View (cartoon, rainbow, N blue to C red):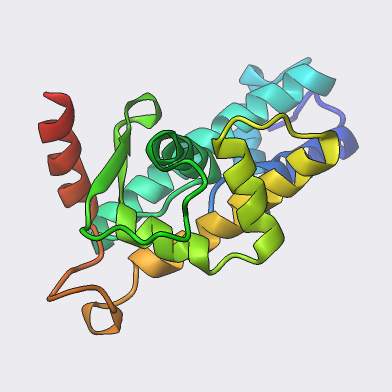
Length: 207
């Protein structure tokens, strides 16, 4: 089917969408995302006809994010293992920081969960989040702590903060998706499944 689009522009924009969206969706590869949005254009050319620049980017990004959401949901359903995104981790750290301030060096004496209702009621084990924070390089941990206590960050500090959240997201996903035998927590504590997170947030937020 003939496409009324600049092919070189399409490939360039699709590649940009793939790289940018992949940064926010762990376990998704930029090349796969790029291939998916190009396939969308091939299958539904009329939806993209005449689009250029920002409009084309926005349309392809919408398709890319929708696909990533579906792929993560399928993964969680088939494995019972949750994969956090940087946006969700930023919400969770901010909410936990409201109660703990910058005292990440004081491990909690009992496990609990912190949930972010604005991020779809995503929940995380306090112990798991604390362990992931403890594995960060000092500059990253300090950047997150400063953000949590409301310090004004310079442009350089903000860049460090976002890199820190990306690293924290990767570590947290590794921590929560370890096998039961690899867990170091008390008793027979398990990595939190999506079903358990849903049950916890349902009870906590009344619905």
